[in-house]
Amino acid sequence: MINDHMKDKMIKTLIEQHNSLKKELDKTRNFAFETTPDGTKISESLARFKDALDDHLGLENDEFYPAVIKKIEEQGLPVEHTRQFIDEMTILEKEIIDFMKKYDDAALISDNILAFRSELEFVISSLAIRITSEEQGVFLYW
Image: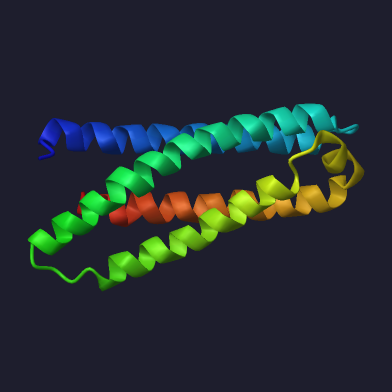
């Protein structure tokens, strides 16, 4: 059973992770838009983002979302919209992961910097949508 302290800690941790993810992607963006972008610095920043994302998704997908669904069900409320939301977040998650797989090499990033920049902007906006949707939506069920 999750007590109130655990609930508060879960949301606090998830929000801290969101902030860390946004900061790392901002660093990646800054590196990518330097006058002479360094593929190695960009790649290293993306690797840090990926590690943080893996930790975050583990907590969110394996612990938070199942607990939220259970809580909604226990209250006798419909869960269809929440499940649909989770499915939509999974699509965004896949897009972000596909981007990181596509650009998993510093030389590839350097050789395709214009495409990388464009796709990075899409990833940043996708992440922002996901974070806002979670913090102003599903987190409220917690």
